[in-house]
Image 1 (cartoon, rainbow, N blue to C red):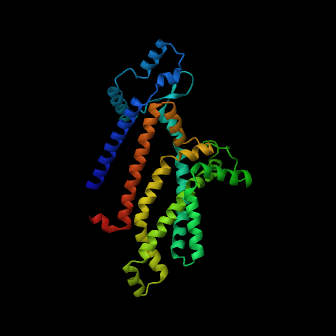
Image 2 (cartoon, helix red, strand yellow; image 1 turned 60 degrees about the vertical axis):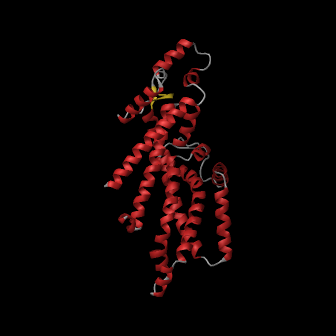
Image 3 (cartoon, rainbow, N blue to C red; image 1 turned 135 degrees about the vertical axis):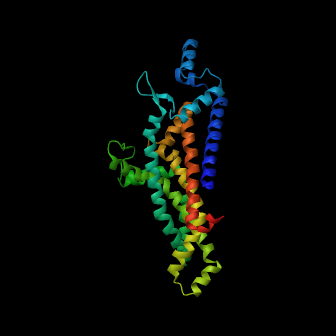
Length: 319
C-alpha cells in the first residue's frame, strides 16, 4: 500500500511541476495569442475585448491556479483556435476526445507488431550459430534503426500504397464512419512506427539473452538434464526480459504519447498532429492538457513496468 501511495504522490507532484513549467514557458516565449487570432490589423479595443474574454488580462499566477482548479473539476477549458461554429469555441475535452482514439489505436497496432515480431526475432538471433544469419540480422536491424521516421513513412507509403496498392495514400477513413476501413488504413502507419522499434527491441533482447546464456545457472540447468528449449524459454528468456521491460516501457510511452512525424506523413488526425498545430498557434489550453496527457502516460507506463518486474521476478516485491 505504501508503494502505491508513493507512486500516486509522485504522479501528482510531477503533473503539477510539468503543468507549471509549461505555463511558464508560454509566458516567456515570443508572440501573443490575441495577435495570432485577430491578426495585426485588429483595433486595440477589439484586442482588449478578446483578451478579457479569454481571461488573459489577469496576472499569470492567478490564471494558472484558476486553470488548475477548473481542470480538477473536470473543466479542461476551450480552445483558442478551434470552434464549433462562428460564435462558439470548441471545448478542449471534446477536441482531444475526437483525436485521442486515433493515437491510441495507432499505438495498440504498433505495439502488437513490436511484440509479435521482435521477441521471436531476438530469440532466433540469439540462438543462431550461423555467421551469415548473424550478419544479416545485424545489418538489417541497424538499417531499420538508422532510417528517419519521415523517410520510413514515405517509403511505406510508396511501396505499400503506390506500388502494391494495398491502401490509398491520404485516404484516411474516420473510425466513426468505417471502423474496419480505419483499422486497415492504420496498419501501414503502425508498421512505420513499429519497424525501427522492432529492430531496437530485437537487438536489445538478443544481447540480454547472450548475457544470460553465459551465466552459471544455465550450465547447471544443462547439467541437470534440461533440454535446450526448456532452458531458453523457462529460464533464460524470463531473466532476459527484465532489462527489456524497461526498454519496452520507453517505447510504449513514446508511441502512446503520439507519433508526431508518422501522423503528419499519413495525414492522421491524432494527438501528435494536434500538439504541433496547437503549439504553432499558441493554443495554450490544448497544449497544456496534451502535455499533462503525455506526462501521465509516461509515468503510468513506468508504473506498469514496475508491476511487471514484480511479476517476472517475485524477489523484487520482497525488497
